[in-house]
Image (cartoon, rainbow, N blue to C red):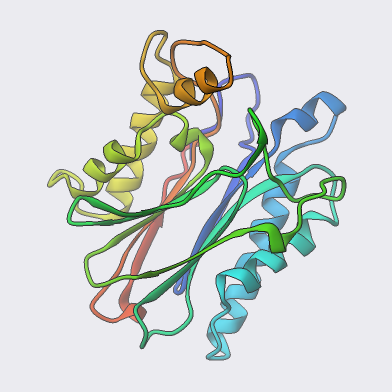
Length: 250
């Protein structure tokens, strides 16, 4: 995780991972203009989701991605601000099915042998106004996009905030996942964060965010500075052997 270089020392992104689930949340930065710490919402959501996920795993009943989305919503609506959320979860170590739920513009990718198996869609009310959960937001946990993906050993699962997805094309993320230089989840996460950071600071680079801006009549060039977070997991030969890592560089 890499915080935006705007004088803040705390990232407004947050993440969690447990043996059967992982996710990211991105606190909505516009709340700073109202004197609200946008990191409180994202951290509250991820803390609640992590606790619920671990509790279910210990009881032998792993929570679904939507169960965890509702948990995030309950936590986020109890504090000021708002956050986007992306959650990926396995329901059973015996079934190779990955459930993904997203609300807003944080997202998930599943990569197999360097090819994109699945990429989630963004949810925006309008340009730069993602769907979000919080006490003043009309968006509900039930509005989340839902996906089910059949995975197999060797697949790479990545959850990322828009600080990654606005600066790095999905095809380039996939290349990080298969590079022989990055053989561990931590190395892949670090490579993705480094690439996103480099492109976010570019003055004339081509990044996905610029294409979205152009579609809405807002021409711009260069990268988009933002907090940058991703969590990476390998699917093992049995799901209870999956490995996960995140990148956190405050």
